Image (cartoon, rainbow, N blue to C red):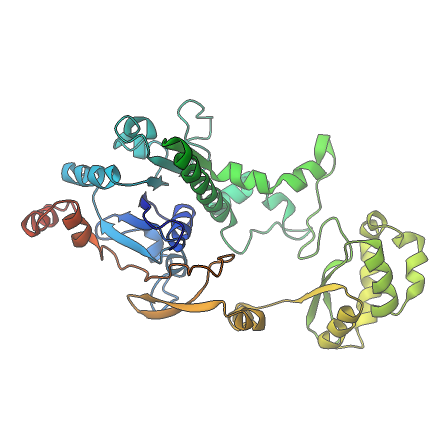
Length: 396
């Protein structure tokens, strides 16, 4: 039995933050009913066509869900939604701030008749009507939150800032929504009461930014943008080998620095060089030290350098491409890949990290738009004639 079997989640979601949250709830066995706009659905369905004609973001964040098309602004659509929510344990939404409240889906409106309901609202800047803040109604996309949170200011090269290569602001908000919903379910098991969870993308990202913020405490200089290298530890980052490939390595302490000098660079005298006698000094002299390392690596291939790093017990990694990750030997050896079905056939899918051996994660199909509408309406008490009428009126 999966941990969340018997839990029903109704979600009005789009893009990444809420769908990533609810997909993980589905992984644990929850029933997730995804409400989508008739005709077009979650707009993430149209982001690209990279996976057998389906969108890469969508297939990642929407497996194991049931898709219901519903016009929530239609009078009968509102009634259907109320019926679905009345039997739900969790309601998740990342509509525009205030939109859910306007159709009667705020925690305050639902709690009197459904006191056990957990409502999770995900927004860019927070959607608490008692503490709206001046940014409450600003549009908030992933890149904009990366910028607003200060992430871009410390990411990139000295000459140019760079965004993260994946949607980390959405992902961070989705993770905090997921973990707080799990905590709320535990609390409800003790008290019988639900609650409201207000997840802000900005607050989620600023939590992740606490290291650079504290590094720049009380007006100190922030970590410099250092490309793929670590901004405040050196040597820690990519270095070219003689065959043109890159080797990623990282040192964390003085013992490793001594081993690196003696066994990798074969220059033990560097240990006593006053320019490099501490991490702070090595960071200050990183250009000079980089030149020494690059020259020492030049006669060797990347594989030979990795062998030396392994002997010296220095942390290292290859710079993997997406193709490399699909065939990564560690993921293969640990049997981390399975398959899920889609409307365009089966696709590989990574098993959720950290699931214990005692139960298998739910890995059901990615739904087509509206695939489960009729079945769920029938569960809610609508007969075939009523469903046909709802469809004719554009309510579903």
